[in-house]
Image (cartoon, rainbow, N blue to C red):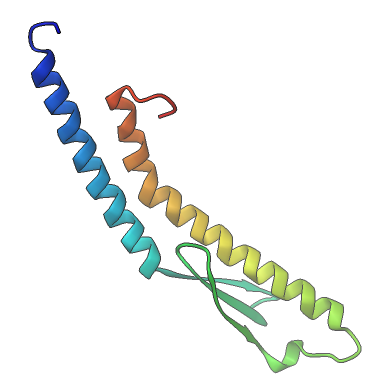
Length: 110
């Protein structure tokens, strides 16, 4: 081992532990977050967790037309997609800085 190699390894381990704590904190924030997506000008609202789990669907009675179920189905899909996109963006904001910091460790794939 080169001189100073031990201190470099200790520094890398400290950085890895710090990032692990940051990742855990970001994951906890995401688990608690709830994001809402809408479609049809608010006729359908979907709520998902930060992890992307569907929590609720709200449908305005005005969106319910027995002769046009397809439009309601499309609105539900669009609202869920909108909420899932919001969850993905939140995940990128919370996890991006942490993942970006892993490049300093010289780990493959980061």
